[in-house]
Image (tube, rainbow, N blue to C red; front, side, top):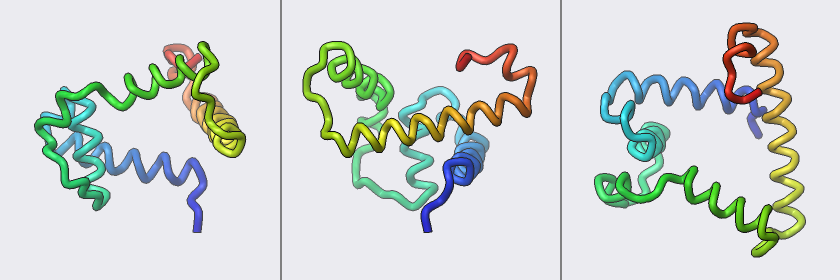
Length: 113
């Protein structure tokens, strides 16, 4: 059964909170946080985590890839992937909108506006 985006967000939030509470190092390094959340969720990549956290972040790599694909119009993904990403973006935007409506303070101070 596929989880709805708000269920995934809540489940992920629980995992992230537990890892942040348990391991201070995760508060200072998002790469370490990502690996520790994956481990908490039962994913073992068989990598050297200490070496991996020194690598560029997933966000940095994906941001550069998005620039190449969206701004430079090179190495474009196939149509099915584009549709999937657009759907996910739309669902995420709806979820964030509901979240902000429930939290007026977040709306006023949010970087996501």
